[in-house]
Amino acid sequence: MAATAFAREQLWDGLRAVALPDSRFHLRFSEFIPDFSGSDAAIDRLWALPGFDAARHVFVTPDNSLTGLRQRLLARGVSLVVSSYNMASGFYLLRPGAVPQGHELYGAWPDGLAHFGEPLSLTALADLGAFDFVATGASAVASSGVRFGRGHGFFDLEWRIFSDMGLVDNLTPLVTVVHDVQVLDKKLYPSPDDVLVDWICTPTRSLQVARETQRPRGLNWKDITPEQVHAIPALAELRRIIGLA
Image (cartoon, rainbow, N blue to C red; front, side, top):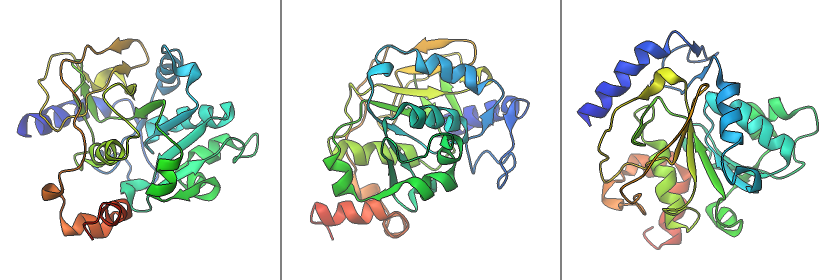
């Protein structure tokens, strides 16, 4: 954990030169994952990845760096699931055609997701079936696929919830979009809790990761605090579904 925090902080210094400030959080990278100069080029690379053109049901995190990706997916008419900020309002589904033509950029912003999206229970999410592709932002990522978020672990939690529901597995394509300054070009060995990515897309390159370990599966409820269950509706719902509540 100390090594992860050090690497994250180290790369944040370089990120400040290319990051686009957020209207609420400015450049407080512990609160959000920023958009950056050149993100359109990085998303172009993601768009060209093998199999992505066939994806029809996609999960994308609400990170600023992925606004352009969400906009393009809405225009393409895929089934798009996005988590709310800090998972506080669960998940939203934007069905094909949910956002009027020409309004895809607004639909890709957090306010637009809440406006056009359908709030999803976990039961309704499970009925939609497994994701064809998963995309997430990152504060930093190692070339070995170890990804660092904001330090709060929300994406790792989402992944474990999805794996418990059979929506993702070790073969689900997982890609992160970052600026080149966010890539740590050395091998970091993952912990058992790390969800390794398959691809790293930057404005200048697409890096395929040769994963050597399996991704984690399922929640360990011993690690989940009552405060988390209270703050994250999906955890409370999952507890009820599996009979822990």
